[in-house]
Image 1 (cartoon, rainbow, N blue to C red):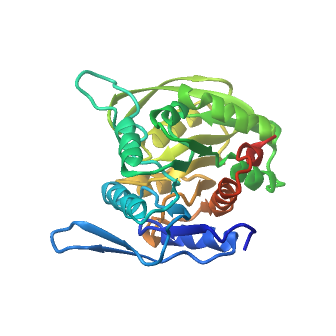
Image 2: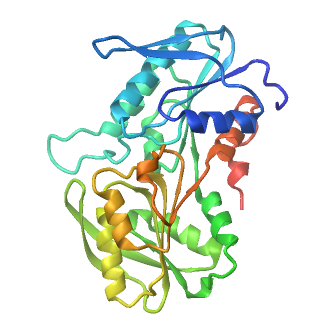
Length: 320
Protein backbone atom coordinates (compact mmCIF):
# COMPACT_ATOMS: atom_id res chain seq x y z
CA UNK A 1 0.00 0.00 0.00
CA UNK A 2 1.36 3.43 -0.91
CA UNK A 3 1.87 6.01 1.80
CA UNK A 4 -0.87 8.46 2.78
CA UNK A 5 -3.65 6.02 1.82
CA UNK A 6 -5.23 6.01 5.28
CA UNK A 7 -7.69 8.81 4.43
CA UNK A 8 -8.64 7.36 1.06
CA UNK A 9 -11.40 4.99 -0.05
CA UNK A 10 -11.72 3.31 -3.46
CA UNK A 11 -15.09 1.92 -4.58
CA UNK A 12 -16.03 0.08 -7.75
CA UNK A 13 -19.48 0.01 -9.33
CA UNK A 14 -21.00 -2.92 -11.18
CA UNK A 15 -20.00 -1.87 -14.71
CA UNK A 16 -16.45 -3.26 -14.64
CA UNK A 17 -15.53 -5.08 -11.39
CA UNK A 18 -12.50 -6.77 -12.99
CA UNK A 19 -10.87 -3.44 -13.80
CA UNK A 20 -11.67 -2.17 -10.32
CA UNK A 21 -9.93 -5.19 -8.79
CA UNK A 22 -6.88 -4.67 -11.03
CA UNK A 23 -6.63 -1.01 -10.03
CA UNK A 24 -6.89 -1.88 -6.34
CA UNK A 25 -4.09 -4.46 -6.70
CA UNK A 26 -1.81 -1.85 -8.24
CA UNK A 27 -2.68 0.48 -5.37
CA UNK A 28 -1.96 -2.29 -2.88
CA UNK A 29 -5.28 -1.88 -1.09
CA UNK A 30 -8.66 -3.57 -0.97
CA UNK A 31 -11.73 -2.08 -2.60
CA UNK A 32 -14.11 -0.55 -0.09
CA UNK A 33 -17.55 -2.09 0.35
CA UNK A 34 -20.58 -0.86 -1.55
CA UNK A 35 -23.91 -2.55 -2.22
CA UNK A 36 -25.72 -1.89 -5.50
CA UNK A 37 -29.22 -3.32 -5.83
CA UNK A 38 -32.40 -2.85 -7.82
CA UNK A 39 -36.01 -2.65 -6.77
CA UNK A 40 -38.52 -4.80 -8.66
CA UNK A 41 -39.50 -1.76 -10.73
CA UNK A 42 -35.91 -1.39 -11.97
CA UNK A 43 -34.85 1.57 -9.81
CA UNK A 44 -31.21 1.46 -8.66
CA UNK A 45 -30.27 1.74 -4.99
CA UNK A 46 -26.76 2.04 -3.51
CA UNK A 47 -25.48 1.73 0.04
CA UNK A 48 -21.97 2.61 1.24
CA UNK A 49 -21.12 -0.09 3.76
CA UNK A 50 -18.39 1.73 5.69
CA UNK A 51 -17.70 5.21 6.96
CA UNK A 52 -16.30 7.69 4.46
CA UNK A 53 -16.78 10.85 6.51
CA UNK A 54 -13.91 13.20 5.71
CA UNK A 55 -12.31 10.71 3.31
CA UNK A 56 -11.00 11.21 -0.21
CA UNK A 57 -13.25 8.90 -2.25
CA UNK A 58 -12.57 7.42 -5.70
CA UNK A 59 -15.50 5.83 -7.58
CA UNK A 60 -14.59 3.50 -10.47
CA UNK A 61 -17.44 3.17 -12.96
CA UNK A 62 -17.14 2.94 -16.74
CA UNK A 63 -19.76 3.21 -19.47
CA UNK A 64 -20.15 -0.25 -20.94
CA UNK A 65 -22.77 -1.83 -23.15
CA UNK A 66 -25.51 -0.77 -20.67
CA UNK A 67 -24.42 2.85 -20.77
CA UNK A 68 -27.64 4.36 -19.40
CA UNK A 69 -27.79 2.05 -16.37
CA UNK A 70 -24.06 2.53 -15.76
CA UNK A 71 -24.45 6.30 -15.68
CA UNK A 72 -27.55 6.24 -13.48
CA UNK A 73 -25.75 3.97 -11.03
CA UNK A 74 -22.85 6.44 -11.03
CA UNK A 75 -25.09 9.44 -10.31
CA UNK A 76 -26.79 7.64 -7.42
CA UNK A 77 -23.49 6.42 -5.96
CA UNK A 78 -22.04 9.93 -6.09
CA UNK A 79 -25.11 11.14 -4.19
CA UNK A 80 -24.65 8.38 -1.59
CA UNK A 81 -21.06 9.48 -1.02
CA UNK A 82 -21.97 13.15 -0.85
CA UNK A 83 -24.66 12.48 1.77
CA UNK A 84 -22.20 10.31 3.70
CA UNK A 85 -19.95 13.39 4.11
CA UNK A 86 -17.06 12.35 1.88
CA UNK A 87 -14.44 15.09 1.81
CA UNK A 88 -13.89 14.80 -1.95
CA UNK A 89 -15.54 12.60 -4.61
CA UNK A 90 -13.36 11.63 -7.57
CA UNK A 91 -15.07 9.81 -10.44
CA UNK A 92 -12.85 7.36 -12.33
CA UNK A 93 -14.68 7.01 -15.64
CA UNK A 94 -12.50 5.01 -18.07
CA UNK A 95 -14.98 5.34 -20.95
CA UNK A 96 -17.10 8.50 -20.99
CA UNK A 97 -20.45 7.59 -22.53
CA UNK A 98 -22.19 9.98 -24.96
CA UNK A 99 -18.82 11.53 -25.85
CA UNK A 100 -19.57 11.38 -29.57
CA UNK A 101 -22.56 13.66 -29.09
CA UNK A 102 -20.26 16.61 -28.49
CA UNK A 103 -21.82 19.16 -30.87
CA UNK A 104 -24.94 19.93 -32.87
CA UNK A 105 -24.67 18.50 -36.38
CA UNK A 106 -28.13 19.69 -37.32
CA UNK A 107 -31.10 21.67 -36.00
CA UNK A 108 -32.99 20.59 -32.88
CA UNK A 109 -30.26 18.13 -31.77
CA UNK A 110 -28.86 17.74 -28.23
CA UNK A 111 -25.27 18.09 -27.07
CA UNK A 112 -25.49 15.05 -24.84
CA UNK A 113 -21.82 15.03 -23.83
CA UNK A 114 -22.34 18.41 -22.17
CA UNK A 115 -25.51 17.14 -20.49
CA UNK A 116 -23.62 14.14 -19.03
CA UNK A 117 -20.89 16.46 -17.76
CA UNK A 118 -23.54 18.61 -16.07
CA UNK A 119 -25.23 15.60 -14.47
CA UNK A 120 -21.95 14.23 -13.07
CA UNK A 121 -21.12 17.64 -11.64
CA UNK A 122 -24.59 18.29 -10.22
CA UNK A 123 -24.65 14.81 -8.64
CA UNK A 124 -21.74 15.99 -6.49
CA UNK A 125 -18.47 14.91 -8.17
CA UNK A 126 -15.40 17.04 -7.43
CA UNK A 127 -13.13 15.61 -10.13
CA UNK A 128 -13.28 13.27 -13.14
CA UNK A 129 -10.48 10.96 -14.26
CA UNK A 130 -11.12 9.58 -17.72
CA UNK A 131 -9.27 8.30 -20.79
CA UNK A 132 -9.14 9.29 -24.47
CA UNK A 133 -12.20 11.45 -24.81
CA UNK A 134 -13.67 11.51 -28.31
CA UNK A 135 -12.75 15.19 -28.50
CA UNK A 136 -10.31 17.02 -26.20
CA UNK A 137 -12.65 20.00 -25.82
CA UNK A 138 -15.12 17.84 -23.88
CA UNK A 139 -12.93 18.62 -20.85
CA UNK A 140 -14.33 22.14 -21.07
CA UNK A 141 -17.88 20.85 -20.65
CA UNK A 142 -17.09 20.22 -16.97
CA UNK A 143 -17.00 22.92 -14.30
CA UNK A 144 -14.79 20.65 -12.19
CA UNK A 145 -11.20 19.46 -12.85
CA UNK A 146 -10.75 16.68 -15.42
CA UNK A 147 -7.69 14.46 -15.65
CA UNK A 148 -7.63 13.31 -19.26
CA UNK A 149 -5.42 10.22 -19.44
CA UNK A 150 -4.07 8.75 -22.68
CA UNK A 151 -3.74 5.11 -23.68
CA UNK A 152 -0.92 6.08 -26.06
CA UNK A 153 1.90 4.94 -23.72
CA UNK A 154 0.34 1.46 -23.56
CA UNK A 155 0.20 1.18 -27.37
CA UNK A 156 3.71 2.58 -27.85
CA UNK A 157 5.10 0.08 -25.34
CA UNK A 158 3.21 -2.82 -26.92
CA UNK A 159 4.36 -2.12 -30.46
CA UNK A 160 7.83 -1.17 -29.27
CA UNK A 161 8.25 -4.74 -28.04
CA UNK A 162 7.43 -6.15 -31.49
CA UNK A 163 10.94 -6.53 -32.85
CA UNK A 164 9.90 -8.09 -36.17
CA UNK A 165 7.96 -5.05 -37.41
CA UNK A 166 9.62 -2.79 -39.97
CA UNK A 167 8.50 0.61 -38.68
CA UNK A 168 10.07 2.41 -41.64
CA UNK A 169 7.59 0.51 -43.78
CA UNK A 170 4.62 1.15 -41.49
CA UNK A 171 2.05 3.92 -41.78
CA UNK A 172 -0.28 4.98 -38.97
CA UNK A 173 -3.65 5.87 -40.49
CA UNK A 174 -6.03 8.32 -38.82
CA UNK A 175 -9.66 7.37 -39.58
CA UNK A 176 -10.61 11.04 -39.96
CA UNK A 177 -9.12 14.51 -39.63
CA UNK A 178 -10.21 14.73 -36.00
CA UNK A 179 -7.80 11.94 -35.07
CA UNK A 180 -4.91 13.22 -37.20
CA UNK A 181 -3.08 14.91 -34.32
CA UNK A 182 -3.23 11.81 -32.09
CA UNK A 183 -2.21 9.55 -34.98
CA UNK A 184 0.74 11.81 -35.80
CA UNK A 185 1.93 11.62 -32.19
CA UNK A 186 1.68 7.82 -32.25
CA UNK A 187 3.48 7.61 -35.60
CA UNK A 188 6.32 9.81 -34.36
CA UNK A 189 6.80 7.73 -31.22
CA UNK A 190 7.14 4.43 -33.12
CA UNK A 191 8.99 5.86 -36.12
CA UNK A 192 6.21 5.29 -38.66
CA UNK A 193 4.69 7.48 -41.38
CA UNK A 194 1.22 9.07 -41.33
CA UNK A 195 -1.85 8.91 -43.56
CA UNK A 196 -5.36 10.30 -43.05
CA UNK A 197 -8.73 9.04 -44.22
CA UNK A 198 -11.20 11.74 -45.16
CA UNK A 199 -14.71 10.54 -44.40
CA UNK A 200 -18.23 11.90 -44.15
CA UNK A 201 -21.14 10.68 -42.02
CA UNK A 202 -24.45 10.77 -43.89
CA UNK A 203 -26.20 9.23 -40.85
CA UNK A 204 -25.46 7.90 -37.34
CA UNK A 205 -23.23 4.78 -37.37
CA UNK A 206 -22.63 5.25 -41.12
CA UNK A 207 -19.44 6.55 -42.72
CA UNK A 208 -18.23 7.09 -46.27
CA UNK A 209 -14.53 7.31 -47.13
CA UNK A 210 -14.04 9.93 -49.82
CA UNK A 211 -10.25 10.38 -49.92
CA UNK A 212 -6.91 9.20 -48.49
CA UNK A 213 -4.15 11.69 -47.72
CA UNK A 214 -0.74 10.01 -47.70
CA UNK A 215 0.99 7.03 -49.27
CA UNK A 216 0.00 3.52 -48.15
CA UNK A 217 1.24 1.53 -51.15
CA UNK A 218 3.40 -1.42 -50.03
CA UNK A 219 3.08 -0.20 -46.43
CA UNK A 220 1.98 -2.04 -43.30
CA UNK A 221 -1.08 -0.15 -42.10
CA UNK A 222 -1.90 0.56 -38.46
CA UNK A 223 -5.38 2.08 -38.24
CA UNK A 224 -5.56 4.19 -35.05
CA UNK A 225 -8.80 5.40 -33.45
CA UNK A 226 -10.23 6.29 -30.05
CA UNK A 227 -13.01 3.69 -30.26
CA UNK A 228 -14.56 0.95 -32.37
CA UNK A 229 -18.35 0.75 -32.17
CA UNK A 230 -20.05 -1.13 -35.04
CA UNK A 231 -16.74 -1.29 -36.99
CA UNK A 232 -18.46 0.17 -40.06
CA UNK A 233 -15.82 2.88 -40.51
CA UNK A 234 -13.10 0.29 -40.03
CA UNK A 235 -14.56 -1.99 -42.68
CA UNK A 236 -14.82 0.80 -45.24
CA UNK A 237 -11.42 2.18 -44.36
CA UNK A 238 -9.49 -1.03 -44.85
CA UNK A 239 -11.32 -1.76 -48.11
CA UNK A 240 -10.10 1.57 -49.50
CA UNK A 241 -6.58 1.07 -48.14
CA UNK A 242 -6.29 -2.39 -49.67
CA UNK A 243 -7.38 -1.04 -53.06
CA UNK A 244 -4.50 1.44 -52.77
CA UNK A 245 -2.03 -1.44 -52.40
CA UNK A 246 -1.12 -1.63 -48.72
CA UNK A 247 0.45 -4.79 -47.33
CA UNK A 248 -1.69 -7.79 -46.39
CA UNK A 249 -0.85 -7.51 -42.68
CA UNK A 250 -2.91 -4.72 -41.11
CA UNK A 251 -3.35 -3.65 -37.49
CA UNK A 252 -6.25 -1.93 -35.77
CA UNK A 253 -5.58 0.00 -32.55
CA UNK A 254 -8.32 1.64 -30.48
CA UNK A 255 -8.75 2.61 -26.84
CA UNK A 256 -12.44 1.85 -26.32
CA UNK A 257 -13.77 -1.50 -27.58
CA UNK A 258 -17.50 -0.74 -27.72
CA UNK A 259 -18.04 -3.61 -30.22
CA UNK A 260 -21.79 -3.23 -30.68
CA UNK A 261 -24.12 -4.71 -33.30
CA UNK A 262 -22.25 -6.41 -36.17
CA UNK A 263 -18.80 -5.32 -34.96
CA UNK A 264 -17.41 -8.76 -34.07
CA UNK A 265 -18.37 -10.33 -37.40
CA UNK A 266 -17.01 -7.36 -39.30
CA UNK A 267 -13.70 -7.48 -37.43
CA UNK A 268 -13.36 -11.21 -38.03
CA UNK A 269 -14.04 -10.77 -41.74
CA UNK A 270 -11.57 -7.89 -41.94
CA UNK A 271 -8.79 -10.35 -41.13
CA UNK A 272 -6.53 -7.97 -39.23
CA UNK A 273 -3.15 -9.24 -38.11
CA UNK A 274 -4.11 -7.91 -34.67
CA UNK A 275 -6.85 -5.79 -33.12
CA UNK A 276 -5.29 -4.06 -30.11
CA UNK A 277 -7.64 -2.41 -27.59
CA UNK A 278 -7.70 -1.58 -23.89
CA UNK A 279 -9.97 -2.77 -21.09
CA UNK A 280 -11.81 0.52 -20.48
CA UNK A 281 -14.95 -1.42 -21.42
CA UNK A 282 -15.47 -5.04 -20.24
CA UNK A 283 -15.44 -7.59 -23.06
CA UNK A 284 -17.38 -10.82 -22.40
CA UNK A 285 -16.00 -14.09 -23.83
CA UNK A 286 -18.37 -13.98 -26.81
CA UNK A 287 -16.71 -10.75 -27.96
CA UNK A 288 -13.23 -12.24 -28.07
CA UNK A 289 -11.82 -13.51 -31.36
CA UNK A 290 -8.45 -14.62 -32.82
CA UNK A 291 -6.04 -11.71 -33.08
CA UNK A 292 -7.70 -9.63 -30.35
CA UNK A 293 -5.23 -8.17 -27.82
CA UNK A 294 -6.55 -6.39 -24.71
CA UNK A 295 -4.13 -4.12 -22.81
CA UNK A 296 -4.83 -3.19 -19.19
CA UNK A 297 -5.32 0.45 -18.26
CA UNK A 298 -5.17 -0.37 -14.54
CA UNK A 299 -1.56 0.83 -14.04
CA UNK A 300 -2.36 4.26 -15.52
CA UNK A 301 -5.55 4.72 -13.51
CA UNK A 302 -3.89 3.51 -10.31
CA UNK A 303 -1.04 5.96 -10.85
CA UNK A 304 -3.51 8.80 -11.50
CA UNK A 305 -5.46 7.93 -8.34
CA UNK A 306 -2.31 7.86 -6.23
CA UNK A 307 -1.04 11.16 -7.65
CA UNK A 308 -4.40 12.82 -7.10
CA UNK A 309 -4.52 11.68 -3.50
CA UNK A 310 -0.97 12.89 -2.81
CA UNK A 311 -1.41 16.13 -4.81
CA UNK A 312 1.40 15.38 -7.26
CA UNK A 313 1.58 15.98 -11.00
CA UNK A 314 -0.53 13.89 -13.38
CA UNK A 315 1.08 15.24 -16.53
CA UNK A 316 4.43 13.72 -15.53
CA UNK A 317 2.97 10.29 -16.34
CA UNK A 318 2.84 11.24 -20.01
CA UNK A 319 5.96 13.37 -20.21
CA UNK A 320 8.15 12.55 -23.23
